[in-house]
Image (cartoon, rainbow, N blue to C red; front, top):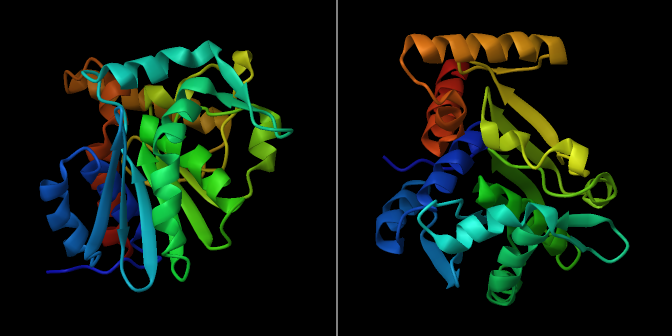
Length: 253
C-alpha cells in the first residue's frame, strides 16, 4: 500500500530513501512510488551520485553514501586534511566539497524547474556530508529549501562555516555510529544541526553527555553479547537507522 510522507513519518521516509540511494534506478523506482514520488532523476558523475524525486508538493534530493569498493568514495573520505575555503564563511572538508562540485550543475538545473515545491535534502554517511554542503549552497540560490535530514554524518566544516548554515538540519546519530565521530574535533571540524540521538534500545532520546557515555557502554555490551564485534559499523548501517525510525513511528501511533 502506498504511503504518503507526513511530518510524523518524515524521519523514517528520509532514512528509507537514503538507503534506496545505494540501488540502481530500476530498483529504486519501486520505493519512490511507494512513497508517492512518481517522478525521479538520477545524476551520476565520476562516482558522485544522487537522486531527485518529486511529486506535486515536495522534491527530495537524496545523496548516495560511501561504498568501500568505489575508489572515488574512498578518495573523498581520505581527504580529511584538505579543507577548502567557502568565501568568507569558514572551511569545509575538501573531499566532500569535491563530490558536490561533480553533480552541482545538473542538480541545480533540475531543481530550478521545481521551484514551486518544498525542497528537502537527505543522505547517509558520505551522502550525509554531501547533503549538508548541498543544502547550504542551495539555500543561497533558492528560497524553497525546507529542511535537511542526515543519518550517520561525519563532521563537515569548522565552527564558522556551521554558524553560517541556516537550513533546519536534523542530524540523526545511532548509538555508537563510528562515522559520526570523524573527522576529529581537534582538527577543527564541528557538527552542524540539531542532533537527534537514538539510544541502544532504538529510541529517540535527549541525553546529556554523561547519559550518552553510559548508553554507549550499554550498546557495546549488548553488541558483544550478540557477538557483534564491530558495533560502530553495525550502528552506522542505514538499514539499522530505517528500522529503528520505523519502530519509532509505529510506537507513536
